[in-house]
Amino acid sequence: MAIDPAGKYLAVVDTYQGRTRLLIVPFDGSNDGNEREIPLGANSRPAPVSSGAINKEGQLLLGLGSPDSWFLEPNIIDLATGHATRVQIDSPGDNFHMAWTPDGEIMASVLSMHGALWKFEPESR
Picture 1 (tube, rainbow, N blue to C red):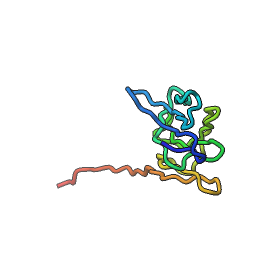
Picture 2: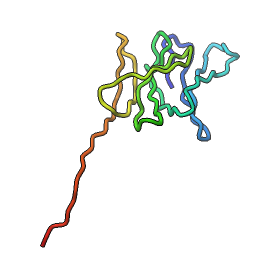
Picture 3: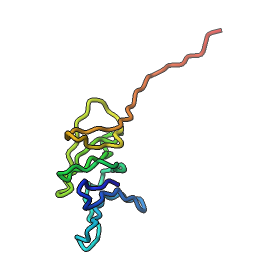
Picture 4: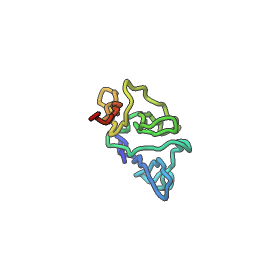
């Protein structure tokens, strides 16, 4: 979960019975104290959110998995509209622990994948 910088709500990734949702949970009793779901699309697979992932403009940094990628790709979610914008990155990998820096930049822990192809052949005797 991540807390709004103004302390008015939490953004929570809730996984229950095979369904994952992004919820906004207000602290002040607005919306009758009930959470509000931010629809992310049927094929999106959100990663847990981190502290510092919401900026003053109500934008949430969230790693989303999609059917066309192996990785959790960084997205900016506008919590007012639910609109997601994929952040372009230089190297592929899973993006975790994303947070906004004081000057509005994005920092993240990225677990990249590097591979090599090996061919093993039996020794001749």
